Every structure is written in C-alpha cells, then in structure tokens.
Image 1 (spheres, rainbow, N blue to C red):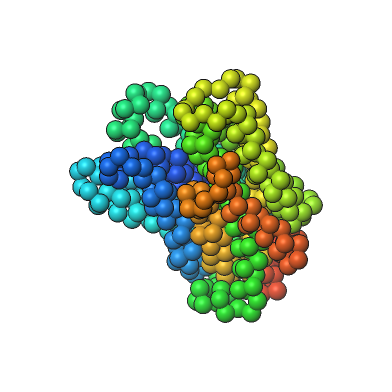
Image 2: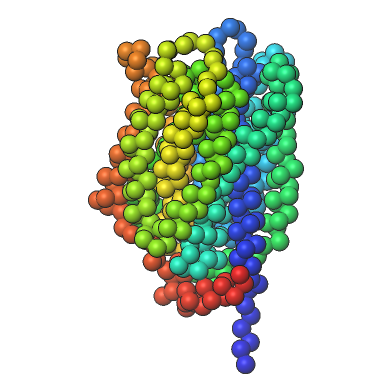
Length: 471
C-alpha cells in the first residue's frame, strides 16, 4: 500500500486560464502609460507651451529599467518559498500602482510632485511585472507535458497582444464616449482606475491554485535553494547562460515587440500624421489578428525546436522593420503633410496588412521564448535566473526601445528624409546581435527535462502523466 502523501494537483486548464488572465492584466497595466503618454505629458507636466513627450516617455520607460532589480526580489521568493506566492504578490503590487496613477493630481495642483508620483508608480510597476511574467511561465511549464511546453506557455506569450487589445478597446470606448477636451482633462484616468476590478478578479482565481508539482517535489526532496540570487551568479556557467538568454533572445524580442506595437503607433501619429482614431483602429485590428500566432509559434517550437522558430522570427523582423516604416510613410503621407489628415480606406487596409506582417514576425520571436528561457536554467534557481535574464533583456535593454528611438530622432542631426527613421537603428542592432548569438552560441533546448530527475527522484513521465489525466 502506497502511503506517500502527494501534493494537491491543479487542473492544467485552470492553471493556464488563471496564469494567463493575471499576466494579461499585468500587460494591460504596463501598456496604459505608454499608449496614454501624450495625455500624461499634458496633465502631469508643466503647461509651458513646450512638449514634454520625451520626458514622459523617459518616466514611463523607467519601469523597464527597474525590472532587473525586481526580478531578483521576486526570483528569490519564487525559488525559496514558491512560484504561486511570488506572482500573487506581483499581481497586487501591479494593481495598486496602476490604480494610483489614475489618482495623481495634475501638475497645476501639486507641481513637480505629479511627475515624481508617476515615476514612483512606474517603478512599482516595473518591480511587479518582473515577478509576474517569469512566475506565470514557469508555473504553467512545470505543470505541462514535456512535449507541449511551447504550446501551453504560448498562451502566456499571447497575453501581450491580448492585453494590448483590451487596453486599446478600453481607451477607444472611453475616448469615444466623451469630447476630446473631457478625455484630456479627466477621461484618461478611467482606464487606470478600471484596472483594480480586473486585478481583484484575477487575484481570487489565482489564490485557489496549489504550488507547481515540480517545485513541490524539489521542496520535498530538500533541494530548494537557500540563496537563489547568490547561486544564480555563482553556479558554474550560469552567468554565461543568462548572457546568452539576454542577447540571444530577450533584448531583441522586446525591441521587436516594442517596435511593432508602440514605435509603430507613435510613428503613425507623429510622423505619418494619421488621426488618432485611425491609428487605434489599425493597431487594434492588427493586434487582434496577430494574437493567435504567439501561441502558434510556441506550439511549432515543440515540433521543430525553439531555436529555428526564434531565428526565423529574427530574420523576418530584420527585413520587415525598415521596409514597414518606409511603406507606412509612402502610403500614409506621400506628400509630406505636416498636419493630421485622414487617409482612404484602401490606404488604411494596406498599412494594416504591413503592420500585421511585422507583428507576426514579432510573434515568431516571442512565441517560443518563454519555453526556451525556462528550459536553459536548473529548477532550483530557475525563477531567479530566468527572471533576471528576461527582465534585463526584455526590460532594461529591449524595453527602452520606445524611448531610445525617440531620443535618437531628437538628438542626431540627419537629413529630413531620414529623421523619422533614424531611431530604427536601435532595434535593428539588437536583432542583428541576437541572430549572431543564436547562430554561434545558443543551444537547442526543447527536449530539456525540467524536473532535474537525477536530483529529485521524480520522472518527467510521471508528472506529465498526472497532468494529462487532468485535461
């Protein structure tokens, strides 16, 4: 008779839904400040007749700069205490930060305290998302069958476009329900305040989940790390592995994603001079139809390998980034108009199609990345190692793309024809670097055993069989 006490199990479908819903809301919260950067600059910075858009982007980008620090904090919790507790804490922190952004008084009321409070809230968001994404991907993967890790973690990857789509929808409905003056005055706060409701629903769904079986087995065997941060940087070869993950995938992936979403959005607004409603429509439709491909490429990587899919996405992005932005200008503003103007339905559809191709290339770089990241690190320091590499590359380096592209455009003197495009040098550089690193240094990982079987005495097949029986 087997008297072994087995840890309670989660239904894999419940795991995916609860993890994905929370991560979706986290991305919604992160993207709001980027999309509404113009409204934030108008309300939380001085009204002195000059644009404070670049300064606002710098504050907004601060959350990405702070994420590596947060990854060590939440990674330490996730590797010592458990995956579940770490991403519950990150969810609460993110929700509180987003709600408080919607409560910040205008610059006219409290002066420079307004942008300072925005900075504090964005830093808190950076801390939160640094623990959220890695925790959700690892939690799902440690429940998933070995031959479907890319497929299941692909649902987490797809929360990026879906979170953006929800964000765009809320902004579009709010903007459409009032005058432009009212939206710029107070309406911009509504999407931030609404986040609190979504966060609470996700929190109660996640609270019912149990710890992942892989971590529970590690904990039962007494093999959990006592000092995850120290071990992440002292374990032989782990720093090199983190560098491969940063420059072989995360930095380029984030830069491509930022370029296909936000740099494109700002480019169409500020360079092509399209109407805001047209830009939101294009971005929303493209995001909707490209969302499927994040999960598709994750599943494809289960069959042919993470590396092949990732390199394919990087090469496609290298071609499409300069081509797309050139065509955006040629189709949307061939006469070089300096005022906001409408465009024909045919032109809108053409821009939509080009933007869709760029987004699909971004999906190919991101879809397999979650599975790839967690497969190259050992279980006992997986949360810390993956979190740091992901947040250093995705956050600190790639996450700065929106700000850096704008900064390059305003800082370097080039011909008038090249000025709108010069900022693209940053994402193109990161993509080229990632291709080189992948080809020369990055191993294939899709057959990796996550359970550290030799240390834990639990076979991958046992855990996978239990998970499959729950579907």
